[in-house]
Length: 229
Image (tube, one colour):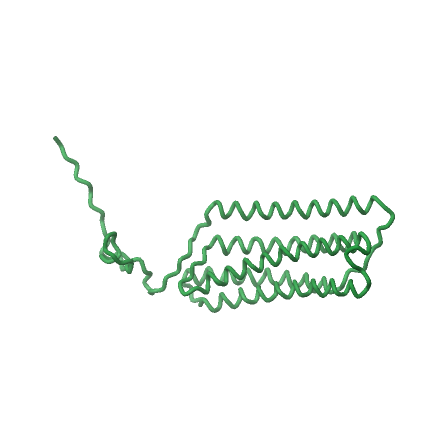
């Protein structure tokens, strides 16, 4: 009876990362360490569930704000109590801050990618751009709160008239979603700043997509508020 002998695996003796200590059963994973000796656990390809999940979330948020916009239009045409309000000027500054934060986040994403690929970028440089984005996001939320205080000083509260009601609802719901984006940025900073960075590319990309969407959504809301309220 003929006997088939399994072919032995071929090991490249010239590769520094394939050593006897790193082979299965060797009892050590030192052979899996990159040549520089620094572990960077980052995946280059985003898993499909993560990519699908972020787009589903963004679609749900878009539909929610579309529903709020529709409700605003219906309410505006259903009565004679629609009184236009002067929107606080700080909203324009807040818009510039949010747009700038998208730019800093893109710089951060490029720095993170260069750091992972060992292209001369340090982790602290990537962290600085992420920190700048986080600071700008917090400044935007503070600016929104100052806008609410300005309306209150003018005697406009949530229940004063339909215009002020929609203003508070639209801006507050958006601010809550921005806070969610800030939470995502904090998670990215935590994962990148760990002793052994465990930031996944899909996490960085998903956070960026969400943040940029918040910026575009705010520009849309500012136009609606300026035109209809």
